[in-house]
Length: 573
Ligand code: WTA
Image (cartoon, rainbow, N blue to C red; front, side, top):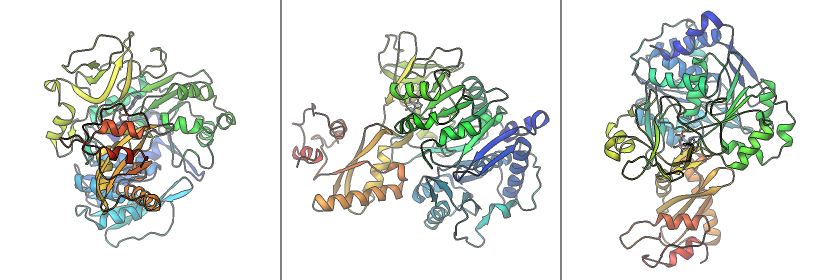
């Protein structure tokens, strides 16, 4: 089979002229790309990749703005059997380098820059920085001209996208691959300092991508589907780049930020392009809700018939606003639980079939055997009792392994219950109707604006700074982002106080931004002479969480090595 054939060529006989992609740039430029045009563009680029020696099984990194070319690059890789790994454009040069090196990628596809929040995201200069510090496997860099600003091009290594496709044919026989052939890697955070390359297959992945687009988003021939996720995340893979196309839908791609030029941008796009199915994250809903109803009320949202959310539990207030102000109490809301590892929606309502309850992702989709079990792996039958969320049987779009590390795959997802179930890493409960309520992560992963980050990753970034000896990172609830990062830091020498502490906080925030990306910058950094540890040397993370939340300390601190640090971390000394 070939995924790109299934997403594009399959539709050419019946709907070559149908719009596949509606694109809107942040500055307002728009493009409509038909399935035929998409076919031609993907083939040309695929031929360009082949001409540069990329072949089946090679890894290709895509580090691009949200433009149709990001999808074209993904589809072109799929067409020739190359394995892509998209790195979110908000990740730093260092994060990019780590992913290139882990995947031993031969090519990097990027752009001069993209537009976001009224600024240019400097992708090429970040790519240059990444490549200058390693990445020996990279032979070629392909650069899309998007922002048009001045960048460096390295002779022999860097090639403009428009030169790569110059003179290439607009047809390209797909590389027919085995259904288990890896389609892509996508790096995601876990409980160690190093992100892991989640490896997905071709046929199984595509199957769940298609059926969930059809079942959960109920896609019909005349729908305009807009999933606001960036292709740097799994949601952008399954509900932008692959699923909607495989289902023959028209899908919207928007390049920029949600509040540029103002908080009405999303709703204006819905009106202008007559979006009928809209899928976003609770953090975006909360952020836009704060600006008030006048923004959505300025626009005609009558084309919308179905709303979706993903990434974290949706709080009642945000749900109500989404339901009444955006959906005008007409539209079902599908709350979809799934993960990078699961490839597609797992627990979600089928609109018109499943009665919804605000805050619950309802029931597992057909074919998915989700459950909540106790420490012993027994199904919890008592209503509303929390336990481990597990999946009892493999499903088509399940991750196949962690790239290059089968043992880590086994250790991470099957560490308990004699390997009988896939352990999702979330805790959950089921109510008396058998509806699932997701309660949060059970590992050291935090969810910042719907994005997964390992606390260890942030800790490793902090201790990589010259002045930092030790760091512990926890989260606390945040009104818009869901969770916010709080870092407790021990510095070399004297504990920074007052002005010095203030400038050190700034420096460390920037530092973490450079090491990982702006989303990982701690909201709060506190300094102390030491971390609260038990006599056996374990950091008392639960205590740190209490402190981060500003709650009263109920834990017994008498066993602490150094009780005074608690006052320092609370900012009381
Ligand atoms: C969380 C995003 C509650 C969960 C597709 C999961 C959710 C992690 C929901 C995966 C939801 C995702 N309700 N929590 N509807 N959807 N999560 O890999 O903790 O970026 O384990 O995939 O997000 O995040 P990831």
